[in-house]
Image (cartoon, rainbow over all chains, first blue to last red; front, side, top):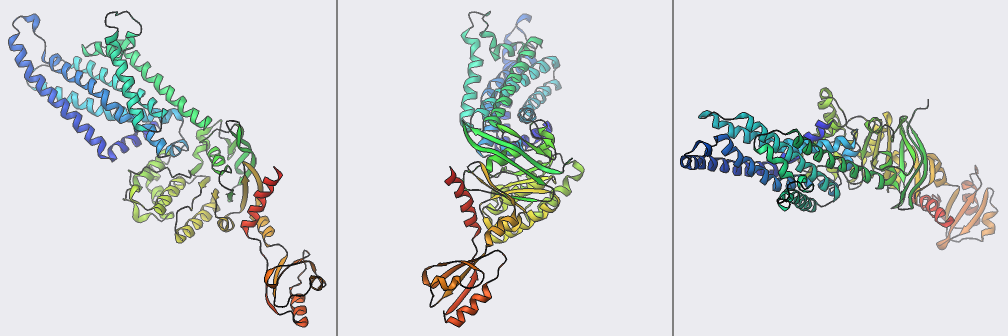
Length: 248
Length: 311
C-alpha cells in the first residue's frame, strides 16, 4: 500500500515537465562539476610534489561533486516537497487518499518514499558518473558508498522536513519558503557555533553530521541522527493530518 | 446479526462548540438508495465526511457492514466508494492513469485491474476518453471520472455528494440510471438539491436541517404527504362557499382569486364527480378541475420551516 502511494507521487512528478527539467538541470550541474573536478585534479596534482599532498582522484573529484550535490539539494528539495500535501490540500484531492483503505502513516510514508525515490535517481546518476573514473584509474568504491549513503540520508531528512512544512499550509510556495529557511538554518547552525564544537545546539546541524560521510566514514551515530530526524518530522506530519481529521 | 450496510449511531459533530451535525441516527440496508436533502449548510457534507472517515465524529459512531469506522478504519473504508463535493481529481493524469491509481489504492488486484477499469469506464460512459488528460475534460466528464473512481472497486456502499451537479440533462439521466443500477446490488447514499431527483432514484429520504434529521423515511411517505386530498376547481361564476360545502364528501372549501376554489375532502372520498355534476346543474361555469399537488419543494420548505419555527 505504501508502494502505491509512492508510485502515485512519482507518477505526478513525471506527468509534468517539472520532474524532467529538475532532473536534467541538476545533472547538468553535477556533470559540469565533475568535469571541472577532473581537470582541476591534474592541475593541482601536477603541482603537488610531496606524497603527503597527494590525494586520490576519487576523493578529490567525489568530494567536490557530493559537496555541490548536498548544497543544491538545499534548493531542490523544498521545490519538490512543497507540493506533496499543500497542493493536494489546495486542490482538495486529499479526500481521495483519506477515503482509500490506507492509514495516515502509509500515506505520509508513501509520499516521503516517492520523493526520496525521485531524488535517488540523481544519486544513482552521480555514482554512475563517478564510476566512469574507474576506466582509467582504480577508484575507492567504499568512499563512493559512504558519500552516497550520506547524501541519501541527508536528502531523506530534507524531504521529511519538507513534507512537514507542506502539511502545515495550503500554499505550496509558503511551504517551500519555510522549508528552505528551516533547512538553511539547520545547515548554518554549524557556522554559528564553529568556535564551540561541544555546543549541543551546534551538533543539531545537518552539515556536521554529513561531514563524516563526506570523508568516507560511515558513523552509526550520524546514521541514527538522520534517521531520527526524518522519523520525527514524518511523525509530526502524521499528527498534523490526524488533527485535520479530528478538528476538521 | 442484522444486514445493515450503513449504520450511523448518534452521530454528532461540533465545530468550536457549534453543532454542525447533532444526533443523526439512521440505517441503510443492502439494495437501497438513500437521498440526503437539506438546505445549504445543513450538515449534509459533514455527515458524509463522517460516514467515509474523512472527519472524526465528536460523538457517536459509524458502522459499515458491521465494521466500526473508528476502530477498523482500513477495513471499513475498503467497503466504501466516495465522491466528495469537490472532485478529488489529479488533473495532470489521464483518465486511465487516474482510474488505475484509484483501483490500486482500493486494493484491486493486478489480475482484475484491467477489467475493473474498463468496467468503470463503460458504466460511466468514459470509454472514448481513456487517453485524455483529466484537465482537458469538460465539467460533466470530470464528474463522470469522479463517479467512476467511486465505483471502481465495486464497494458495498457508494457515497456521492451532489453527483449530478454540472451535468447536462442527458448525462443526468445516465447518471441517475447508473445510481439505480448500483443501488440494486449495493447501497447508495446521495445528497442533492434537486428534489425531483430524489423522487426518481431514492427509496429512502432524509431531510436534514441545521444538523438535525427532520424527516427520515421511505420516499412513499413523502409522496403521500405531497399528493394530499385536495382538488383545485376553476369556476367562471363561483358561488358562495356554503354551496360548495354542501356537496357530499367535501370537508373544506376555500375561495382563491380568479374564481379558483380549493376543495379539501375526507380521506378515501372521491367527490370529483359530484362536484362536476353540481357545477353543471347550477351553471357555475366549470372550466378546470385538477388534483392540487403540493410540490416536493413545499413539503421540503414545510419540514425545514417547522423546525425553524420550533426553535
